[in-house]
Image (cartoon, rainbow, N blue to C red; front, side):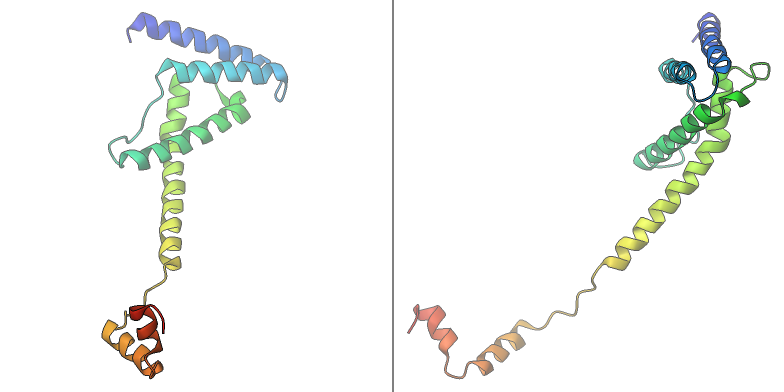
Length: 158
């Protein structure tokens, strides 16, 4: 993205941010403004992907989506903390994503994964040592001294 396109994106996001900041919290206007801002952030394609090579793809995606979910919740609840004088919207969002929410999501998803693995292992039934087939057959023969089972299954009845 060249500097002109980046400046245009920053200007568009700043305008949406100012509309959201003007609106009173928990009002319809504020929700609409935040929705538009969040949509523009996602469509920009400029969200960072912290530590992308550190985890397997599926595991990384779980962590990343957890972090994004927490980030979006934070933006909606605490957008008043954004200071346009300190950073652009994308710099603020990416800073929060990388420094706070991604590391929290790693701990959360890692903990959930460990709990799941432990639970699965705890619930597995340990099979008993299988009995010797010869011993099983000998037991059945001993229980059927008149050979009724043998005649029924090999000769089709009596």
